[in-house]
Amino acid sequence: MRRKWMRFFLFLFLAILVLSVAVWGNRLAPWDPLETDFEAKLMPPGREHWMGTDNVGRDVFSRILCGARNSFALTFLIIALVSVLGTWIGMVSGYFGGPLDTVLMRVTDILLAFPDTVFAIAVVGMLGPGLKNTVTALSFVWWTKYARMARGLAGVIRTRDYIVQARFGGAGTLKILVCYVLPNIVPQVIIMAALDVGGMMLALAGLSFLGLASQPPAPEWGYMLYEGKSYMQTAPWIMIFAGLAIFVTVVVFNLLGDSLRDILDPKE
Amino acid sequence: MIKYILRRMIQLAAVLLGVTFLTFIITWAAPSDGAEMKYVSMGMIPSPELLEQTREGMGLNDPVLVQYVRWLGAAVTGDLGESVKFGDPVLTQLAKKLPMTLKLAGAAMAVVIFVSLPLGILTAVRKNTWADYIVRFFSFFGVSVPNFWLGLLLMYVFAVRLGWFRVVSGGTPGGMVLPAAALAVPMVSGFVRQIRAAFLEELSSNYVVGARARGIPERTIILCHVLPNAVFPVITLAGLSAGQLLGGAAIIETIFSWQGIGNMVVEAIRVRDYPLIQGYVIWMAVIYVTVNLLVDVSYHFLDPQMRLGRRAD
Image (cartoon, rainbow over all chains, first blue to last red; front, side, top):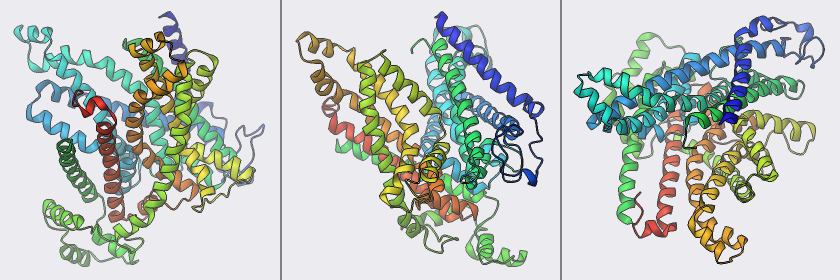
């Protein structure tokens, strides 16, 4: 158990490290991430530009530092959105049961029939590329997972004695949901959300890699990869470092999610 | 058995009906519509009156439900409209591109199974030895690696630097190696974990202890007793990852210019070819759901307990 906590704190520390890069990336960056310099375009990594420069002479290292903020902000925004929304929808549905529950489950059945990347690509494709539509698309795809889990848990919890007693004690439905049902669902939601950070980041990067998500010239990792792809022959460092940034971040958050599950979930 | 399949087919039909409805609604909510696209594809900017007239003519001013029923009626007869970009009927276009994607996805799946099954068994049997640690270490990183980055790296190393493959795959078997690998590697990791877990669970069950007590060689136990039981989670996983495969293919195909359905849809998105995007989503959903139905049905053939109706589904 102590080793589990040690591991957890180690990964938490790493995650905070990555996060602080995202928060203070703008100040740490040695160059302006948007400043173009055609004299210095496609320069290989060197003393001046640690990770080289891209096709218009922007410093890749600075762009990665500043891009972190965009990637993180979006990832956390979507995770927060889907976990809160999904949990509430699922909880209400599982707690009340009946026709509402049936309808909801059929809706999730339909949504689960779409492979998630395919669906996200298609939704963004139809609504039009852009940040807002990317958030919409990914939220649309991911909330069902949380709803299903919350529904399952709420369905079990509602038959528990303490819920019956709370009702005898005169607690209203909203109070029961918020004070007695929700707290018993939240730990599972947190585990799921923590494990999803990495996956969400990949999904997001995948969409912006296809040129669907971000708005240039603002730096964003997936989009940097997309740009770097065209210069692979002459300037491979653009795509190597942008991908490395995604990879390292996803590794850290997957490790954190795993260790959090080890601590919170006695089943594993 | 037949009753079960029938019931599942009816469920499937209901889900697919929902799928078409949802897809239709999203297209309907899209910022530009068929009438506008028609003129844009001809390179014209229509006047508002003309646009309105065309909308009326195309029935785009009718209530959504009426439009949906009309569209669905055409869709069941195989008419999903015409692709704006390619000019073909959507179905023809899909049928042309789909085999390439299936080929790629099939190759990737084969790689996944052939690599992850031995590795999964190895890690379970040699639990907590260096072999286990090494495989788990790599499989952990495999889960976290973005497949498009892996695709680019593979391309850079093996096509650009070493020149073993061509940068543009061109649909040849040789050109399939890199995209299939890029698709397979992240999935292998997930499979190894699952197979390892399934094997460990089986290995700790009573029949294995019994077999060991009877002096049956370990290899026979693993291959003849445990493997057939542990294969079920693998089948389920294979079905579920069909979705991952189809989605991943969309991204990987654009990297390697593989002329499959994923590459096509990204092109379609660039020019807002709604009918084609619509057809793509629906077909992906159909394939995904059908694969998973087949997985469930295969249980009934493969698992004697299920065949006898002892295990509830």
